[in-house]
Structure formats: structure tokens, C-alpha cells
Image 1 (cartoon, rainbow, N blue to C red):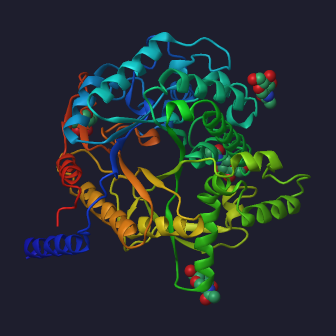
Image 2 (cartoon, protein in one colour):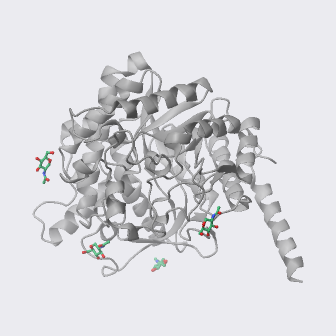
Image 3 (spheres, rainbow, N blue to C red):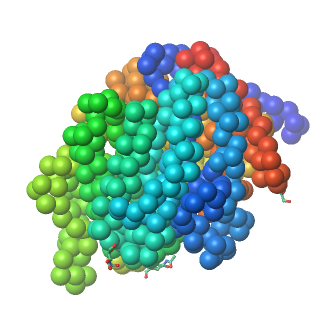
Length: 491
Ligand SMILES: *[C@@H]1O[C@H](CO)[C@@H](O)[C@H](O)[C@H]1NC(C)=O
Ligand SMILES: *[C@@H]1O[C@H](CO)[C@@H](O)[C@H](O)[C@H]1NC(C)=O
Ligand SMILES: *[C@@H]1O[C@H](CO)[C@@H](O)[C@H](O)[C@H]1NC(C)=O
Ligand SMILES: *[C@@H]1O[C@H](CO)[C@@H](O)[C@H](O)[C@H]1NC(C)=O
């Protein structure tokens, strides 16, 4: 009886998922890729002259921060096994590979003007050459969370002197690799860097300046983004012929109840979370509602200045339109509603936003990461929102994926790929969104930050118990390969 119901239920699921699959094709110039980041895959944390990053430092000092007490010392050992990674990429048939360059591997002490580590340079240089030899375009994230610890000792992203240090690092990699790298991302997920790193104390450097750190950090980071974008535009773009963007993370928010107040709450939380970084890069300033609310809440709290810093007119001009494409990391959707004044601690970003975002029990949740819910339609709505609000900028989906436990038979990840890519096809063909590519997170199971190695997000399984870090493609790898090859979903 139970078996019978189970078969019926899965047939129903297969039928509904398939009936929702779009039969449109992906445009010829649509880029398919997979994404990764240095600390999460490379390992070799103390080899060949690499400096110490905030993640090396924090996790060695306090291993309990990570659920399985692991760290990225070895990770997937991609620093040594990169040839295998390239074979997996080649076989998968991707057009692009998104990876990041470790700042402390290139500039061990971090500071502007300090020594460049030739062994680190050689590693990335060879890697890029080999990718290009296989016809895979490198999509390079300049900063993906692994700040040199030396710079953190001086305040990290809270200290405006970091802007010059970042510019030195970024310009160094552009000079070294820009003859071959044509696709640059200045920062990965400013919201996580600033809110979780400097305000909530839940990602490196684990600082807790609630409601203050998030805005100081964001402000310095945005100015650093704008400055390197303009520098690249002025000095390198015409000769190197590349493009540059920023990868911003955002969920989608549905109103908790179908009423005007919750609809307004959903819009407000989107303007606070996505808008905090996207709005300045496109328009030159923070969303008006953020400025108004944070200014007035700060005043009521007795601050002499708003906790949200102000851009000068020159900075606004520099930031306005500082992108060639918008990178979008999207995983999940939540339900939004306004909260009572005593719901959040003060001061905090959440209090400033005035909105709570909670899961919907009727959507599918990831077993490995319950806050992650599979709502492909949310991606489509987010793409349409960006198109309508910002005159349809080119969007590159720089991350999307699904968290599972171990195992090669990853049906839920396959549903994620089919569902979200179907939403992308409808956004392109029915809504007219300029989506230029999709890069799945991730090629390999890797170090998933505080989730350690328990959370698996790869198309390829990695055996972290084996010193060889053996790689085995999962079922989803074959499904994605077929999609890339046919440029269609399997309908
Ligand atoms: C900011 O950084 C500079 C140089 O890196 C340093 O001299 C200064 O003390 C730092 N400020 C704070 C508040 O740490
Ligand atoms: C950070 O500070 C806030 C407000 O002081 C507090 O509620 C919160 O628990 C702290 N978080 C951590 C991770 O220490
Ligand atoms: C809308 O729904 C929320 C619950 O999500 C409720 O708190 C609020 O009062 C409702 N607003 C209106 C105008 O009905
Ligand atoms: C690795 O070891 C852990 C703990 O002993 C175990 O739970 C897990 O199944 C092992 N993984 C593999 C791929 O063998």
C-alpha cells in the first residue's frame, strides 16, 4: 500500500516537473558554466608562500565554528589536482568556469605595494592557459571572501584604507592575467561579506558590530568596486577587451499573505537585501527607502550621524553604471511580512529592514540545509523585477544550486537544475529578460563554509575521507552535460 502510494507520488512529481519544463532552446551565445571559489576547493593553505587568510586564521583559532570542525586546509586539493578538474569541465562541456583568485596566494601580506608571490602567480597562469587550451573561458572572481589576515588586523572592510589595498590586488591580477581573462567579477556576495562577516558574527572575520559594520563594510566595498571598474575601463578595457561585473546574492520574496501590507514588505526586504549593493552599482546610490529608514532610526537611537554612510557626488557618479553585467547568485525564496518593533535587536540590519523572511512549509526544503527551498518561479520573478526596475541590464546567473547529503543519485539536484533552467528559459523567451548565462554551484562537493563537508553541492562527489580526494560524477553531472550539449531541457 505504502509502496503503491510512493510510486504514484513519484509519477505525479515526474509528470508535474516535466509538464513545467520549458521546450524553448537556450540562445547560441548563452554561456553555461560551473562555479567555485579558492578557499573552498584549493587546499594547500600553507604551501608555496601563500599568506594567511581570515578563514585560515578564524578556523584554526576556533574549529568549533564549523559544524564538523573541518576547514579548508586541504579541501578538494584542487591546488594539486587541477588537471583532473579541467578534465571534468571539458567532459561536462561548459563554456565558462568561474573560479576565484586567492588574495593571500598572490599577495601574502595583503598590503598595497607588498611582494607578489611568484608561485601563486604561476599556479593561476598555468591553470588559465590550460582552461583556454580546452576552449573554456575563465570567469574570474577577484574577491571571494579570503581576505589576508594582516588586513583584517587593521579593521578589514571596516577600514577605508582597504580600498587601496584591494585596488592594488585587483590591478595586479588584471595586469598578470587580463591578456587571457575577459570576464571579471569584482566581489562575490557583498551582503554575506558585510552583514554576516561584520555585523552578525557568523562568517569570517566573525565580527559583531550589529547594524553598523554591515554599512561601513558595504560602503568601502562599493567604492572599491566602483574604483576598479573605472580603472579597468580607463586603462585596460580597450586593449584587453574584457567585461567586468559584481556577483550579488539575492533570494526572492513572496508576500506571506496575499495582502497589500505583505506585498509592500516583500518589496522592502528586496530593496534592503538586493538593493543595498545592486542599486548603487546601477543608479549611484542606495535605495531611497534604505536611506530614509536608516537615517531616521539612527536619529531615534541617538546616533549623531546615520549608521548608513553617504556617498559624495563624485562617488555617486563613479558608481552609477559601474558594470558590464550583473552577476546574480540565487538559491531560494522566502515569505515576507512586517514585524513588530520589538521583534529584532537594535541596532541591526534586520531591524532597519522592518521585515521578517521565513520559509514556506509547503515548498520543498533541502534536507541538508532546511532554509533552502526549491521555488524556480522565484528566480523568474526576480529576473523580471530586475528587468523592470533597472532597464533590463545583462544578467549572468553566477550561482544557483541545491544542497544535499552524500550520494551519487542526486534526484533533488536534477529537479533544481531542470526547474531553475526552465524558469530562465521562460524569463528569456516570454519576459524578454537579458540573461546571458548560467553557472551552477558547484562543480565539486567542497568546503561549504560553516556547513563544512556535510553539505554537498557538487555535480561531482569528492571523497574527503580519501587522501586522493577521489572525484566521481553524480547523476546530475550527466543531466547537466546533456542540457549543455542539446541547449534544451529534456522534454
Ligand atoms: C586603518 O588602516 C591603517 C593602515 O592600514 C592603520 O594605520 C590604521 O590604524 C587602521 N585603522 C584602524 C581603526 O584600525
Ligand atoms: C551580536 O550582537 C547582537 C546585539 O548586541 C546580539 O544580539 C547577537 O547575539 C550577537 N551575535 C553574535 C554572533 O555574537
Ligand atoms: C496582511 O497579512 C499579515 C500576515 O502575514 C497581517 O499581519 C496583516 O495585518 C495583513 N494586513 C492587512 C491589511 O490585512
Ligand atoms: C566519510 O567518513 C564519514 C565519517 O566516518 C562517513 O560518515 C562518510 O560516509 C564517509 N564518506 C565516504 C564517501 O566514504
